[in-house]
Amino acid sequence: MKKILLLDIENLHKTEKDLLRYLSQYHSIYLVYAKSPVNFSLDGVVKISPYVMNGKLKVLKMPRVGKDAADFGLAFIAGQLSTQVSAKEFNFELMSNDHSMDYIADLLKIAQFDVTIIQEKPLVAPHIVQELKAEFNVDKMVYLYCENLQKQNFSKPAKLESLINSLKANLKVEEEVAKVVVEELKKKKVIKIDANKISYNVASILKVVKVFSAETAETAETAETAETAETAETAETAETAETAETAETAETAETAEEIEKKLTMIQIRLVSYLATVNHPRPKSLTGFTSVLKKCIPDQDVDEAISLLKKYDLIQINSKRQISYSSILLPN
Figure 1 (cartoon, rainbow, N blue to C red):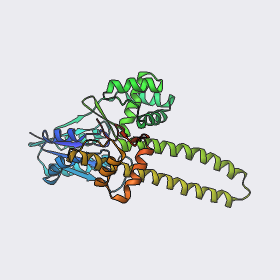
Figure 2 (cartoon, rainbow, N blue to C red):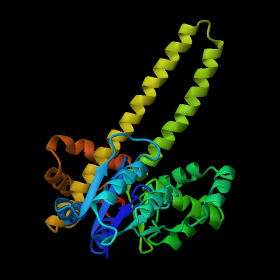
Figure 3 (cartoon, helix red, strand yellow):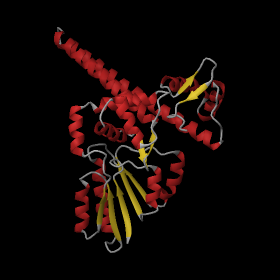
Figure 4 (cartoon, rainbow, N blue to C red):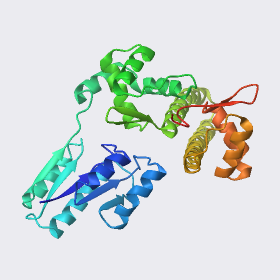
């Protein structure tokens, strides 16, 4: 019996290694997404692309982003496949933690297909997560830990157990709360856990810090604007303040997104170049500048170095010697 996998990749984030393993196990795999939940290395893209070309791995991007958009996409594909393949030759496996997959499974069963739903057990039961989120500011905890992850001298746990202990120590919380923070870090794509080993996504770390900082500033600004508007003499003054605030907020969000894209691009090109030419990490600023010029246009090098310094991805001492964050260049 041939197996078809419908993977809810927005709900269960998978690494390139996971996908390659699944491709050896299934006749075909279908992925649907509204917002891309994964970041693959260049090596991963090269390894996976042949499966996309030959149709074994099919990827559908939803035309609009919205609640449960990917779920509707998977339901659409399941409906198509139910009329294209035979229940005597194929069965389905749905990989998701989303209970809405039950509806898709039921419809496939009506069409006489064997269906299995594969779920990954979370670290903390959903009802416990809700209770703890009501009691603790988990978003702020995620932000504080991501701030630490940006620091050059911060030890980044390599295994799940070490991460939980690190969260307990740094955030001064109990183990259950630390596990909820782990789930949020996974959800925000800050970390990926593969066979109990943890990898970190520099772009997501920066995004969490930027977004939380912007939201905090926006909240304070909104409160101040509301107070000003309340005491303003005319409605026109309030409207002007609101317009200015909206424009400033949009500009801040756009800037954060642009910075995230730039840093991700720099990291990908730098890691790829060093790996391709088997080049050791430059120890001096001059050497690092030369390597960057191999990766990005000359006119962008100064800006790139400034960004990397600003976000503690590199440090340059008084002797112009350079050290690297493990987020930028993993050991």
